[in-house]
Length: 180
Ligand SMILES: *[C@@H]1O[C@H](CO)[C@@H](O)[C@H](O)[C@H]1NC(C)=O
Ligand SMILES: *[C@@H]1O[C@H](CO)[C@@H](O)[C@H](O)[C@H]1NC(C)=O
Ligand SMILES: *[C@@H]1O[C@H](CO)[C@@H](O)[C@H](O)[C@H]1NC(C)=O
Ligand SMILES: *[C@@H]1O[C@H](CO)[C@@H](O)[C@H](O)[C@H]1NC(C)=O
Ligand SMILES: *[C@@H]1O[C@H](CO)[C@@H](O)[C@H](O)[C@H]1NC(C)=O
Image (tube, rainbow, N blue to C red):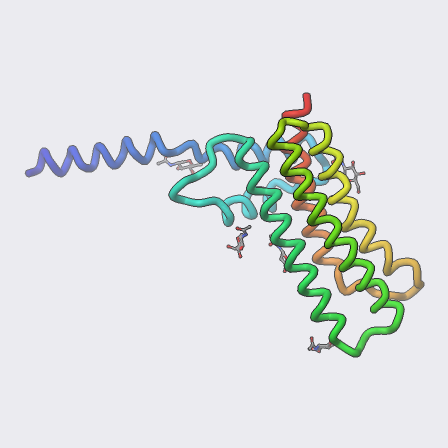
């Protein structure tokens, strides 16, 4: 009885250890934040940890690329929905509304750019994946800049743009490792 219990515990222990490739995320995020000033280690780890399947955790950097682009796409979709909500709100100036519409268009384009990045990465065309991800990263900057053209205009999307920038920077830093 006691022997069986010990055996079960031992097996559980071994199982835990062998399934613990869970260094992948911290390790990859560490390298990403070292290689790019645009990547925050903490955001990288927490975002990925929150979005991986615990049952079927990723084992390779390649998997993390797909996951991080997917997270970015989901986030972009959320941002577009957010913009729509803001536009239905009558409290903005004409200029802010026009900027919000531009941003909505920019983000829609950026999601299709991310789809292109996924296709390129899967076909091992890392150069193209890199270009597409850079373009998606720039989208957030372009959106934010719209509001600055008018003095005193406050962007209601600053936080979203920062997050989107961050998420793309993570994918970009991961893909860089394949590009060398
Ligand atoms: C698995 O790895 C993580 C991160 O490296 C560590 O914190 C944890 O203690 C490890 N678990 C086991 C059972 O070794
Ligand atoms: C960091 O972001 C800037 C845009 O603000 C971009 O021009 C630059 O290429 C990025 N660097 C890396 C390493 O991704
Ligand atoms: C990432 O995790 C958050 C919080 O757990 C969740 O709301 C979101 O849907 C996840 N995104 C993806 C692409 O799985
Ligand atoms: C994604 O987008 C939503 C809405 O813009 C935002 O609140 C959230 O913080 C973003 N981040 C992630 C990791 O999904
Ligand atoms: C519209 O904006 C105001 C002020 O920013 C906010 O209090 C209100 O909740 C918003 N309404 C909707 C429907 O989002």
